[in-house]
Image (cartoon, rainbow, N blue to C red; front, side, top):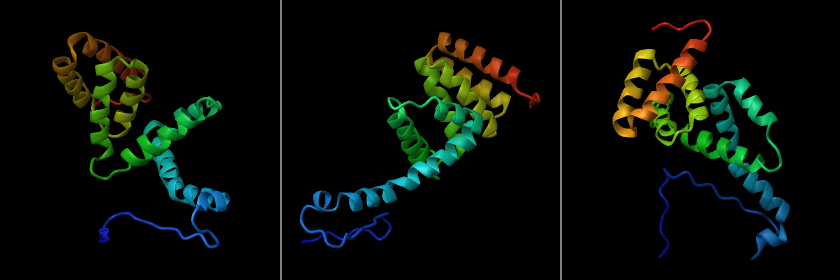
Length: 166
């Protein structure tokens, strides 16, 4: 018995004329075009969010540095991290920044931390909230990690122009 798909599910079908049993072999160009149409919006939406959160300059640098070796990874980041996860309306960008700051602190990804401190400030996180978040990470991630995170965050805050005193 066939199972009915919920009308709320984001389901879309495509019929390709003049194709029978082995559509990818019979109509490869049409299949590719259909797949690009299906998957393209996530990448485009992701790039828009990535630019809004990290800034055009950062994204432009990443795009300029893209090589054939890293191209699929850049596409992956835009599509899944920024297109699927960051566009989900369940959490605000501010809330996502709070969550995101804990991961590079826990794992020692200091370049990523600096980038996400700047993004969190742009997403409305105050200096006091940032300090409270990093203090809490000391409990769960360890004092040495939080110590390094505080130093990086302090440098990012010092580099803000104009100074954002809140």
